[in-house]
Image 1 (cartoon, helix red, strand yellow):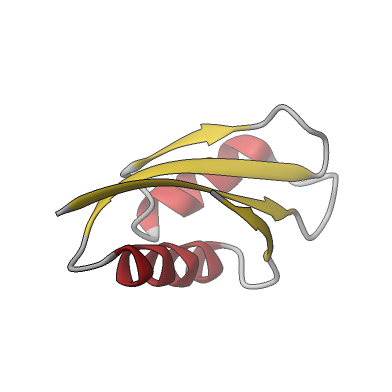
Image 2 (cartoon, rainbow, N blue to C red; image 1 turned 90 degrees about the horizontal axis):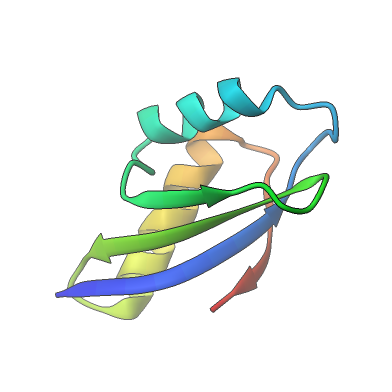
Length: 78
């Protein structure tokens, strides 16, 4: 089943190179998400992810985000 959800997280540094960050996220498995950069120092990813449950979808997305940005701190899930 496919689940849609959004995860917002705080960037480790407000001076992050956004293009490099987006590439890292894609390489880490977040290529099924739209990236939002509207708030300085934060990033939002809207996922459309296949998994056996909502919980597994969200957990796998968080793992992928943290592969790309190990110091990322998830803020909001919806």
